[in-house]
Image 1 (tube, rainbow, N blue to C red):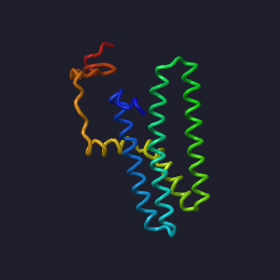
Image 2 (cartoon, helix red, strand yellow):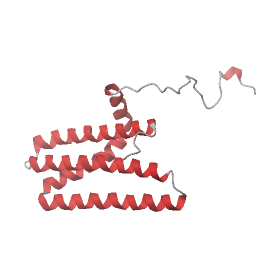
Image 3 (cartoon, helix red, strand yellow):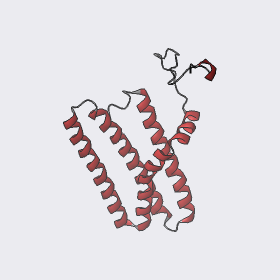
Image 4 (cartoon, rainbow, N blue to C red):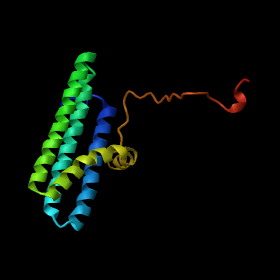
Length: 159
């Protein structure tokens, strides 16, 4: 988790994903807290699942950053090892939750799944995140924008 601020764009994306996890989990907690009979187990499960999802996405970010500095063979094994670790942690949390209560299991499952929902809804969540945390101008930005493709109108092209 020490490399989070190394790349400004990737760090911003990580923050947007975490914001999305919190937002999706809050909506699910509100709905489940109102309508489910086992609301306290469900709310506890959502909280545990959302915290786990945040830690999982931070671990993914850290794994990718670390893998980029390794040779190919070592990076593959490092990434695979961390992927298996994330799956095991999720499985243990789900097993503990189902042992406690079915509503806790549903809460943990939805809390962890909020990571996927946050990723799928990244564009609208990022737009909402920009309202709360505006982007800082990059001091190295020259203001020059490059485009791909032709420049000019159709009349300017030679046939």
